[in-house]
Length: 163
Image (tube, rainbow, N blue to C red; front, top):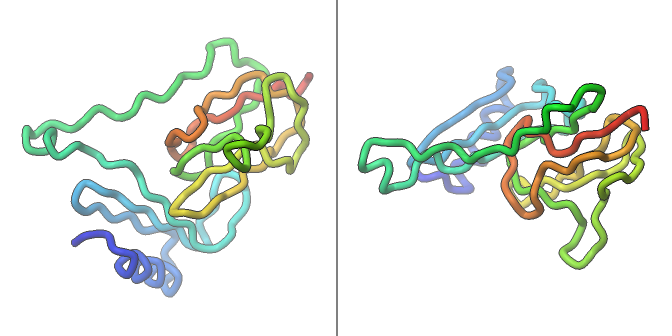
């Protein structure tokens, strides 16, 4: 079955009306995960049902050959991260460092940030989700690339809370 909007809405309704925390469905090389109100996401906020769609698992050519495409390479944080706090993506989506293409970025390197300050946007299913910092400090590394996909739990920023 193709993942139509009607099908996805049916899945959302199923999660909302049941007492399950999450549902994950795969179809035609696409995967979707729906987390209900009871499921906590990593930024500590629970704002109802969250729908996340992961990238295709394998390309059609690779599927015919019986091999899966390699997963996208995530940029590894530098090894000297002792004392730095990670700000991670709470969902799968597209990372945007600014509210609009022609606007100034939310944060830049060496900028001081405060708790609750918006540091970026992760777009998921046409919804723009503002990601807020849970720590105060200085941004020492921006690990996500603008307008590129990010995964759940992927480190977006490294923050020095002492500086």
